[in-house]
Image (cartoon, rainbow, N blue to C red; front, side, top):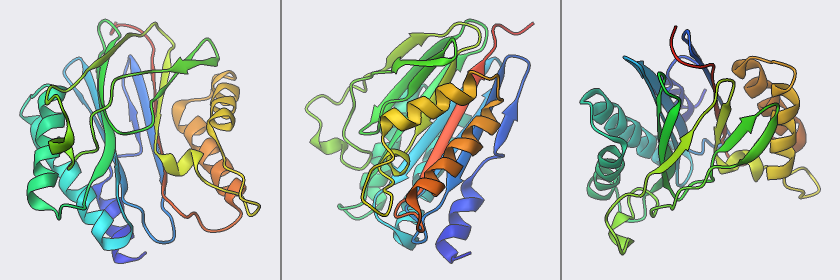
Length: 244
């Protein structure tokens, strides 16, 4: 591994998380020149909490942005702050401690395991996908803020929060742009339609989240044909209903 890749891997949580009501999996396939992706998730009491981060740039500079972003997120999550405050603090940390050109896109999510109520924020990142009944039903929309580190450009400093009521069996997929923007040798993008089709195909045969995530990332690698130009990262979870 390069130093940047080693830093990146050391940030990650365990690649699977299992509980009585929710199973989650994360996959990160780094580009040859590390692109600064990262993610984090945890169970706290009856809540599942998650962050996905895509830092600007490549190499050590991008890895260090991810270190700061994930560190800020974990600190505030452990302090029990809501996702709007965590989002704002993360933006302020990057703006204060990184050069003005340094930024990261990403999303934060929170799921109540007792009710299936999901909330999330979006810092200039591709929207997540809701998988229901073995198909991708839709993108989950939340008005985005500027990327973290560029919050000073926002006209309204309030952080919008998206909400969705999950039903048992629902899966939610978060991903970075390195997945859909991966190109084959002829220049064709992997694309959102292909991603949605593969997720639905594998979810429809009752594959566990980690198996679906693994197969999708392998499809991205196969599509690119060459070393990836950007990191490809997925976080997929399934809520199976209230805790027994």
